[in-house]
Length: 113
Length: 113
Image (cartoon, rainbow over all chains, first blue to last red):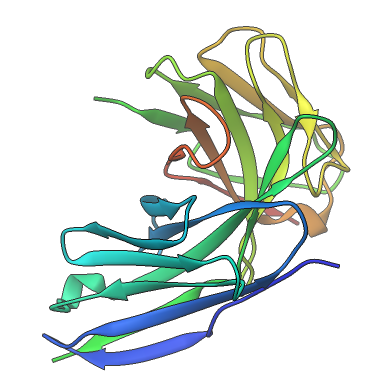
């Protein structure tokens, strides 16, 4: 079977650094994406990793290790507005030439003053 | 820029009624998706389309139908609504598939009594 795990909740303080992990057990893995969703809002794309290593986009970075079936999202210089849910999603081989994106259950990040 | 627009934003239906949710995108994207999001769960793919005139089933297609007669529009239909279909429905589009960023609409909150 396929599984995707991320912590359900993470709490941090303003200005700190937080890491949200995502581990997966899948077959036909192509890559991993991260999305942010504020309460009641639409998910918004943050980053993706198709290859091993670190991708940096401003205060946010994402990392992938295919050998460990593991990735993480790193948020630096946390701000109150970063309080949101963060979803990892893995791209897998589907039927035929299709690929499918499977989403995790999300990690709720609370940033406190 | 409009991006992805979903109509309606809210709707209450009675069991057995039918309705169509409309998604429109103005980014000339090839791929379009319909997801549902339930409390405590991630996004689950209902149906998707890889181009005008094409549709394909996702993870949870039962009870839903879709059509993509025009590139910019992707319609989701519920033929006979059931309480289990109470959810928040998100439409998304992407230039291509795979790990390409998906752009989401603001969602349709659907309650079925």
